[in-house]
Image (cartoon, rainbow, N blue to C red; front, side):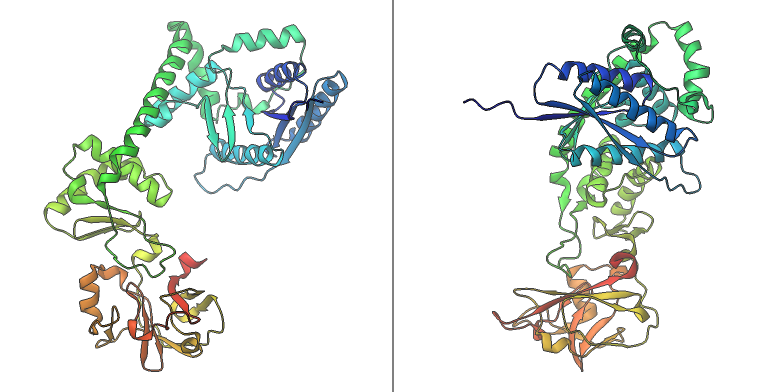
Length: 456
């Protein structure tokens, strides 16, 4: 006997509005002809409108009605709460929460395809809004028509279709949908554009919608080419971070930028590679104003063999190398913190409130100290004259000389020194003193100092 087809689950983002209602219905009708296919309507309850509960009940009723008619559709909903801070865009925060909820629901239901009902006018509006905000290539490319996010494929199948085609479909099938009252609220930028600007624009330029959407499509193609170029252009500019040794070998420092080589590039290339590198090492997007500033400022510092910090971004320039570190780690002021005693009896994070951080202890196979040395340790500030041995057979040298030899910038030399009695065990930025290392094959623990802003 031949096995039946594998079950397939297709998710559709369903608000209950006209566009998503049409897409959900069209998808369910098509799925009816494919045995084993289920269409999952994903509804996000934002709680922003007083009618949100009614919209959820409407979504439930529609899906139950269509299922009774034989369409393979069912509803999955999620309530989200928005956390807004001063200056936040309600639209942006709600969109981020909605996307996160859709992603979670799709993955929970094992749906690897998620359809969204954005159409050609939506895409044209997106390009215009991004242009008015001074957006870059990624913004001007508009909404991606097909992209994979954490294992879920997000597809917008109607980006090339006009709104009128959707209206015709809804009328032909007599579909019931809701009208979101917030769509007429001119406080939101997209609504203001749609109500006040769009009619005049299309009146003056009848082909505006199609042409703007076409421009977004071409910019999207350019974006893909740019991404491929960046993957080839960045690696030759990377160099090891100026801190040659990491406190924790399991978490090496992010790759730094060879600022001397980078500075020889034309300004446009400097800006693009800087954006890409910063996003890779920090996981954040560098603001456009900072990109412009650093693309000019860093080369001047490099030419003058300068040392500089940009604490807001976690960036530091030292010996021609531009490095990123978690901002709190860039400038740790030891101040006049008192000695702190600590009894370490196992792996984990050991808080030291007087120093505003914790000592992270981990079991390691090599490169650690015997656990017995940590039974009673003292964390104290550097006073001068301390000697540190970098490796077996190497002479102990002053901390100042060791820091200089490794190129550790002054602002990365903070944090407490760890002693067992009078024996120096660990120095932030240098690691474990070779004289304290455990014998190979014996139990041993590594150490890493983490300020509170990093350890939390």
